[in-house]
Length: 341
Length: 267
Image (cartoon, rainbow over all chains, first blue to last red; front, side, top):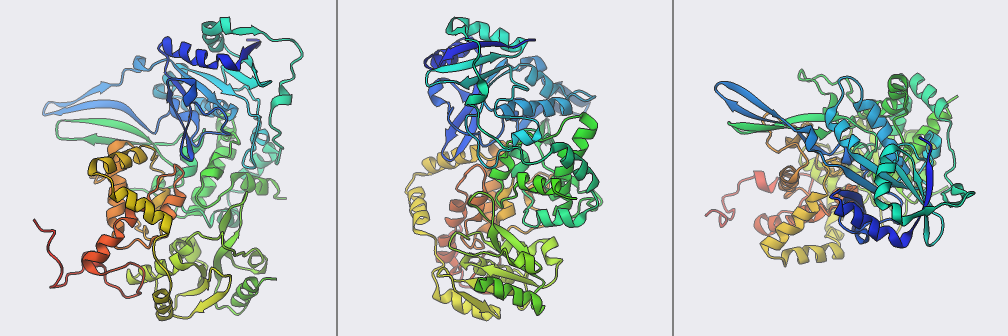
């Protein structure tokens, strides 16, 4: 659909949240918790940290949470009885105040979980999420969205996008059918946007630091360049912080928790950075050392996903670098891959 | 060229070491570990008061050990980690070249574990004042308040295991939490899974934690995990007279029996 432009007053934001809440929609938004910013359910505008650069974790948990029940089962002499999760029980949810890189991160997740066999747990939750992103007025040195095809005002994946254009006014872009439907709830708060608003004037300046096509080609060609991966990852300690804050990392594990009578099957986040990730029952591990796991992380995003799913598995949000306890900086690593001659 | 860089180059040139684990400037205003194997890499080695990461954990990393003889730029926490690792038979005397960075910017070579032990006797190895205050405030809480405090903190946990990966004492090849048949610790990052994991980890570090604080620094969710293990330091000292990371041949308080051990915890 062709996008529609409207104006909303900042002073009407409390009403907006009230309206969503009164309609029974859970609203997930960034909330400050000490030094971290979580994306959590909120009741009022006051809880929302709209001035933060980025939440610590991405918004993916709205459709792909860290722990998710996929099955209940009971055990009896007669056999196992399964009670699948009711997929219709997921609630219509509003993601509010997330960044464009969060919204566009769902594009990668849609591609991954949308492959056959389709992942209904993710897809149903995603279908019931409406995303209101806020464009970025500021960026920091870890941001590189423009190098991977995004940008501080990128609308991919957003149903509505808000951009502050003055102290009092927000430019509202209505981008999808879902966005139109939701905006009908607050149509009375919207006024017509004058023509000639230059949104780009209100966006952060994020410099392009590498050519993504070049990086994809060179990453693909570097599989056997063991020295490259070793040099980059010597300081990597093999935790999962990068993967768990990433808006596009989608690997998971299943674990059953049960007693003698019943159990529950859970889907949990997993990470290729863990040595356990590829450990075989035999004791053999095809990715024996951390440099091979680091290579997998980069190749998955910049070689396998472009090849198989036609998307780059990175939004340039830089969360992995900010969260990394040992300062693995993905922007720097990709730039150096791009510079390989 | 700094004295430190000269020293590292000399060590590499005369083959005293094959790799020097030190610090370099990282992204933004961060400091990161570096692994100098040649002159160009040695030129990046850097040290000032902001270099606080405990690098000792890297001494056990397979790919770092693979280079051959290791050298390390150690702070007090790293020295203590080396002592503790030695007492747990993870590092042998003479295996690692240790250059100690004094907070005043001077460097001391330690040629053997004995000289590290002697130095540690003369220096402040205690918990920082602000952390002591936090521990005191935790201890002043009622059991219920403390329970609520930790549950609130653990709510944030995403089980990325950065705390475990950053801890120089968490070197098990197969951590209890990774064993899932049977699941000793629930694998999931739900309420019980988080609680069980952190309590299990704290228990495994009782009498072994060298109060470097890497677990808390590493946590992307800003959970003050160091307070958990720090709280176990004084009970172990009071009960068994033992402090971790002070001697290379220390026996581990919780796995050693002495006839005169206190038995007042037996109900």
